[in-house]
Length: 75
Length: 156
Image (cartoon, rainbow over all chains, first blue to last red; front, side):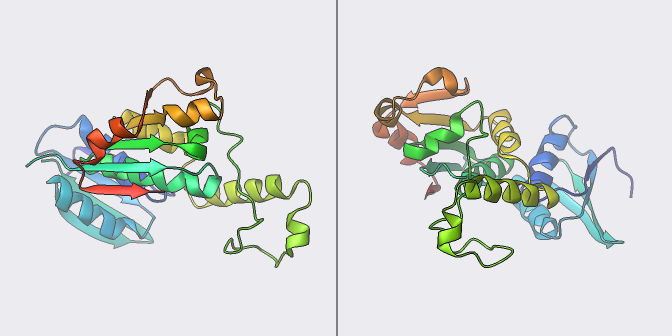
């Protein structure tokens, strides 16, 4: 999937993946896609909850080799 | 959609109890909440520029997981508090948990408002110059002006 920016949250624990995803989205334009990499398994549910509550769209959420990859489209 | 609001009253100044207010506040801010934290009593210690005195004690903290069982008589020995604090900080770092300083900075960056209770600042004769700059001073009434309108209000 194409993306405009990437944020690697590997090694970070709650709440850093969410708080820093929010920061990473801040300077992006509406409709752009942020790819987030995380190793915290709690991020899977948190990222969906973040999308639900902020109006951004979680386009995909996948696991690969112990890492969780998210594609977040900015509102 | 109106902006949601959260208020937290932070009353504790130990390392373990310092985390919940900053974690919840930074997360809520990331979710778009308007957030204020009212620091009172020992919670005021979390506003110090230097947070190195924020510690955890195994004493009177029976739920704290210890690597080996430790009798209370041992927990009260000099140096045990510093040792427990060091071990806890190592554990936090190993698990990628942010430091208190980093979480506090993230809160400030996200416009979380910090209010220090003027009465307890005076009571404990705290020197305001030891606190970070981004603090407003006020009383319970001032806090209720915001807290009364919130969706979530927590006492920590």
